[in-house]
Length: 114
Image (cartoon, rainbow, N blue to C red; front, side):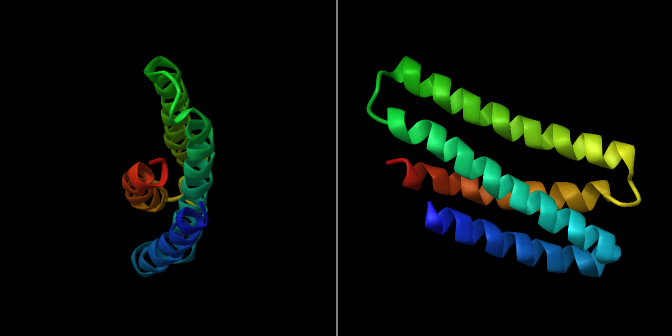
């Protein structure tokens, strides 16, 4: 879990720096904020799945599905924030931060929950 949190924070900072070059200060803030949101969501999803790793598959899949639902809520948060104020939350920067952190962490999850 610590490795996941550190990698998420590192990726958030990196994507914030890239977004600063592309969209300026607001882009950097949006990318870093949504990258950190992705990290928190991923940590929550891992916590949901870990207790049922050896449980029956139906129970495991229910928890895994709940984690995927959390990830979908993150996508909806981007749409809501960017829709309400696109100048303060540039949609592409927010999406880059969220997906740029979430996807690598999602791939890492396979190793973490073994």
